[in-house]
Length: 330
Image (tube, rainbow, N blue to C red):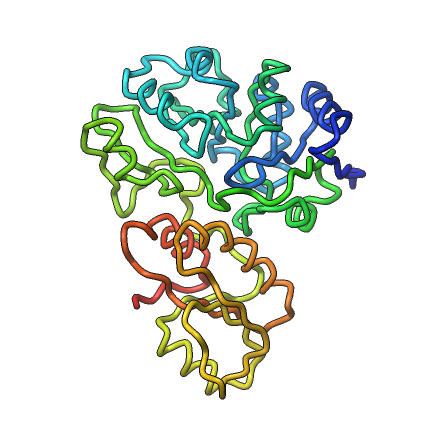
């Protein structure tokens, strides 16, 4: 049964109040954050949270991130909280950092995917933060997209995937970062990055004065840690620049090209877009431009492989999961 999905305006106080009321009533509302739009439900309401999995088509054993109002309520959701958690919270909250901690005993396994750990963060978007603090809410909020598909960085993208499946989307404009939060595990003595994001390994180590490990791969269940994720519907590959030029030049198919270096004047692909050369701006643009290319009607999308340095780690991690075949090295 389809739902009449409301499009609410985050600049209108009455619409923000409506979004808060819907959450308190156990409904689903897509909300803006500084990373991507999240599909929010009251984290204290397991029935509401369970509807997230249905709306997204997401497996129920895949844990969710809970967005809280500030670090003072950490102990409401986690236990055995190490001092490093408060150090990181003071430095990076509100902001795009998720802390993985041992869950408090009372927290529903619906929220954690049955795991003994929980991901927590304080979002930096002023409207969502206002709702959380005024209503003393905590919301479970994975990205507001169908499972494994592109994360949305605008309300229009949310509606493309979830219109008729959720009660409302609160339109707060384009997201600031455009990439999901960094996830850091503090469940053992070894501090580990389990998902790269806007907060880098160097940022974390500078604050902690301790080594922070960043394994190339791991099997720990956290948001985004599935082999295929963040995918457009159109077949999508990443190629080094020479290979991309050769493929576009030799193909008669309608190809959408996302590139950083200029294309030869003789090359006229079906669709093309110049991507930023700065990793922060690239992160802001990535899902937006993949969505636009996906809507262009191309037979495939080709993206020029961006640099493979530490500054581009979060982007490389997303691309490795988004492609329809393994990412090729530059």
